[in-house]
Amino acid sequence: MRSVILLGALVLLTGCDFSMTQQKKYTTYSPAELWADGASARPLPDHVVAQGDIARESESKNPPPVTPALLKRGRERFNIYCSPCHGFDGRGNGMVVRRGFPAPPSYLERRLLTAPASTFYDAITNGYGVMYSYSSRVEPRDRWAIVAYIRALQLSQHATLAEAPEARGKVP
Image 1 (cartoon, rainbow, N blue to C red):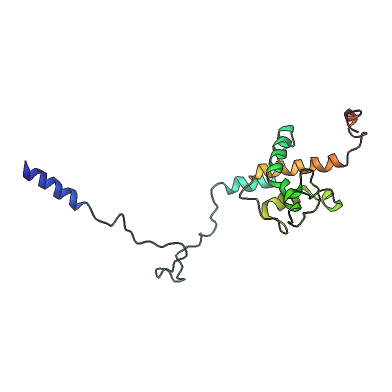
Image 2 (spheres, rainbow, N blue to C red):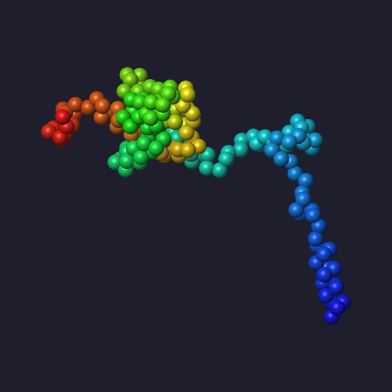
């Protein structure tokens, strides 16, 4: 019995080595002699497309139809991501601006009233001026929802009773 236990212990101990727990590896940006350029971070092969990029690109070029649900989502996302700088009414008077941050342009400026929807989508995606990119925070469909809500804000600020007769007697 003793020899069986010793044999079992010997078999178990022979499987123990540090080759799996202490592997040689390259850390981020560490130099590597293995490749001619000396960099451990390898460039992507030509024509590589990240998983989901084709669908995401298609979504970025094709805005969804404007529906009450899309506007509701746009208002929600606008209030979260945009209102700190742009204000709830889109005039560029958000809380961050009141604390000293440079004021963004008002959505009611003539230039932005006539700008195509893609202008706002691109600003959300890539940033503009001191505004940084929100592409990692806001999904493409939500960007279009925000753009639709911005358009609704713009229209609401310039609407007349003739354009919205159902509002007669409800607004001052």
